[in-house]
Length: 156
Length: 397
Image (cartoon, rainbow over all chains, first blue to last red; front, side, top):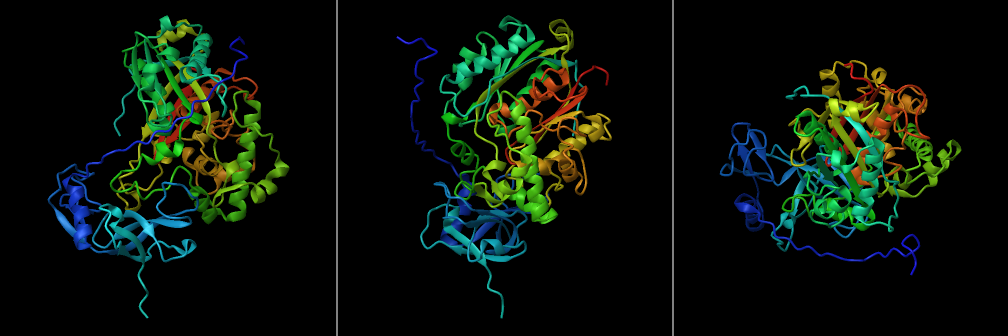
């Protein structure tokens, strides 16, 4: 028998697939079902802080007030406030690279939401660009019921 | 921001590090941790009997082990002792030292052992990081750990030529430092005349972020022993004193881009508050060395400006004039920094450990010339979280 300084070091290969369940809660569920059934994007308004949060949340992150019943409808259109270009391929990514993830501030909302931006060259995305939601033909009961956003065609 | 002075002074009396590597098949996790713990105990001239409490941490999910602190008792020596597990992402190592500092300062424990580790070769970094995103709003819409955003920002501000040159110069300086540090995972022996070639031809990662700019995935552990003033003076000839530390969070769900908060980086916010409450008006003059958590050369080059509250291109000039090397105006990462080794849960603690070694003057081949009286170390993690830790040679502030 070899002594421990000379022996081999084995590597045990393993793989874990970890299923999980996420409880969206009533607030999150209302947002998703409205998106699915009415193609309408809703937020909640904190009347104390005078801010509309999209996606909605049960409490205002600033004053911690319960705002779950204060629904407002926001526009399907908004502006790009920030973006990044995904240039690498990985299994978890929602599109083949290169593609754009943008922070989009919808009209009527005070917080931007992240989504995929298509229909524009990734190198030509600009802050302030007007975009609109394009809904998915088939529902997934997720945020991806909005398939992506795309630039609003400029008026002739 | 509320802040209280410490109940009592806290000194670093022992420091232990493993060598850092992408291949530690020869040891399992607790065996690797034991190397750092033994190194720290030997360094302090203590045994586990002297330790009142153990704090342990690494990245959640990265090695797919639940409650590793239980199994790791084999290596941490925590059996029968009070113990805590902490995990705050990339900042974990800084959080561990900060928690140990607070535990000792509070009077609860006289001597605390803090341990940070990671064995990145065993897990899946992107798997862990993608689980950070909110499953409802963001998990289907995310990228990963890598970004060239710092490069885009620097190029927009300083032009492609200067920005790319500064990033690569920073990278080569860090490699020169890494080559002096016997614990380095990556030390290539890069030289100045390779700059153009590396800028043009080295393998790209994303946009202007090249593989050479980015930190590695390393295996390794770091352990530090902290004691109250009375014990520290008994245990050690020259404890390194932790003067103060600050933690600043930026939560992912809070959207900063529409001015919910002042759009100041967490680095600058942390530095400004820490210096203000300690009466430091010229940090670049005050500190003798800085160990920075620099995940990429682009970030490292950029962040110098925030950490020292500089304006314009002052940080670029420090790099261009090589003032960040030993003997310069502000030596940065004599250890080689995170570009030399990145065992994530240990990485931020290694910054504090290396800064403390520089203060003691016994860092080894990478000890910088001159006396180091005042040192600062940073941690980085999550969606821009910052910890800054101030170290002093003398108890005279």
